[in-house]
Image (cartoon, rainbow, N blue to C red; front, top):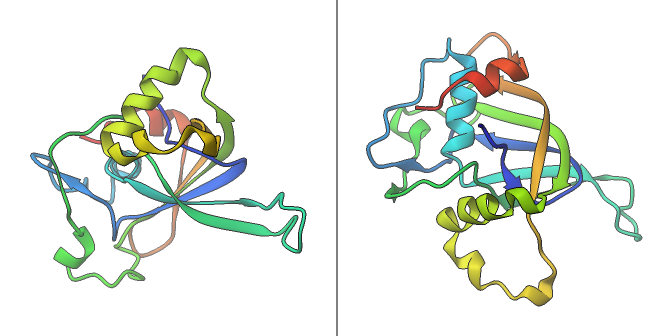
Length: 172
């Protein structure tokens, strides 16, 4: 079964850039741009951080306005990581359409007890320092219930990938 990203928020959009995600030892290069669903799954799997955007619920000046922040993400454990920057290796500018951009849109929900062990393993395997975060900060595990997958990875427009196609694709 495929699991969406784990992090925190509310109704949200998550953006990941192919110009700054981690590559893991023994992993092949990203799929060809014609394989949009595989590119999206590859980016989701090999990303450790994403940008979460939602509508602010703070009671001050920004209530109701768009609000975004960087979050740790994980769609499952990955071992033997090494930093890589695919677009720099390809000499792409971060604004070049070939430097892939992925936006996952959906609703953030708290992870239930039946998924909590997997969520912990997935998150802590990629972000071990999080195990030491103080419980008094009241953080918890959430997941994105996916509604739309939007990918730009080539010149000439974007791909809106059907969810079934996205979940059937393998990042490997």
